[in-house]
Image 1 (cartoon, rainbow, N blue to C red):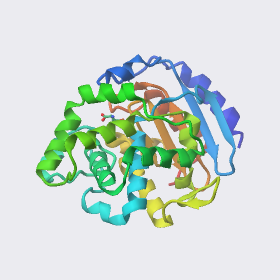
Image 2 (cartoon, rainbow, N blue to C red):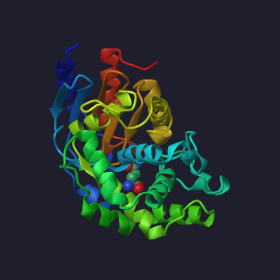
Image 3 (cartoon, rainbow, N blue to C red):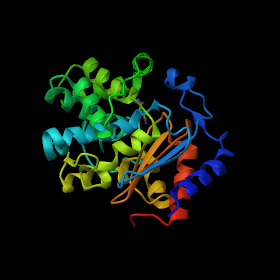
Length: 304
Ligand code: GLN
């Protein structure tokens, strides 16, 4: 399979649609991005990297970071985390509050905002210096020191994150947040602000294509069983109320963020990441979704 040719072709073809969608504006700092950026990278388990466009440029990974948080939580605390967060698709937008009250402060899954906030709360209780340890963890997955939080984005989210504050407060009232609200939000905004390239993201997700083992150093991060669970969580909930369409049209587990990134995993083969900041109505990258759909169609790749 000539991945480079396929990716170049997709980049060229889909660049024509670069005007479709809208950059996330509810976090003002995210709006400053050049909305014409478009990158694609595929990284294989045999350590080959294929890229097109802006695939080596850093961007805000936003909710893609929720996968790292879930993985770290499962590594540190095991499956008892599922007592405080569920594993069903929400069918609602990522920041919706409606289910949370009648489900008594237990979020539907770890990838909607409320679920990720609970995971952050658990990590704060468990780790000595959560932000540093989170950064160190992601840097290890990529084998680089060159990954940082963006403090401007953190400040912007703090200033405008009324809904996230509502989520934490509501969950605290049900006893499902143990730490101080501001501490939980601070950690959550830091992990969302993390900046990575498409290539770094593909590389960082390879352990999920490799049964829980980092391929470059053979370090096991989670068991085979847990790795499968993380992939199935992504398949069911990774694109929120568009997860069904993503399974239907792309056919791989994946995770998106409002910075415009989407990572998808083909178990035993590769990870593929797209970045284009303009989002569709569900808050997922318009072009990224289209390019991934075309990629799995051309390569006939799917886990189904
Ligand atoms: N930081 C963003 C928020 O809390 C993450 C949302 C996303 O990427 N879907 O709203």
